[in-house]
Image 1 (cartoon, rainbow, N blue to C red):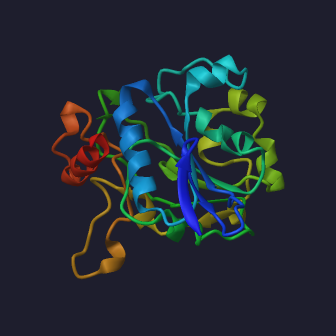
Image 2: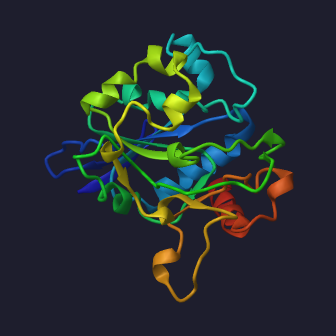
Length: 249
């Protein structure tokens, strides 16, 4: 089996020339964080041992295609605050796909995360118990507090699950933030749990040097990443800058 790169993904080709279906990953995109998106994408490709297809969720493209029309609210800190919930639709309601914010840095093979998938769930995510201390984040955006905060920042979607077929463009464009970010179209037992190291919140989660299970597999710079001047000295900034330099090369 060999790996080839093209069309935004890395694919594996079997000995008889067939191409394996890649694992679809949709990354939230905001023009202010273009470099964050590119570094996140690079960190996924660099470590992946399975075929992956990485696609940015770009709001302007969604609007052109008639998939997104809601007006931006004053509490939306990024352009993908709500468009993220189009993931099952963008995956044609087939198979499993992942959504992730662009402010992530992957330190482990995405195959490890995909192998956690359990078909009995409609979605799977890290179920944080997180209340931010800061009142602002990123480049001065308002830091909001709500139940299940950060659960929607990285989600494995069982796109063919009947419940996720409720996430039509109409619903994503008209439903409340509470309905979407708290996964209110699902019952609690339809939400699977993933270890927190796959959505390791910089400034909140802690590494215990004597316990390898606490080492992050994906760092989430949720308060603001090193690509913002205000946050260039945040925890794990050195890892992000190293990855950025590799991407630039």
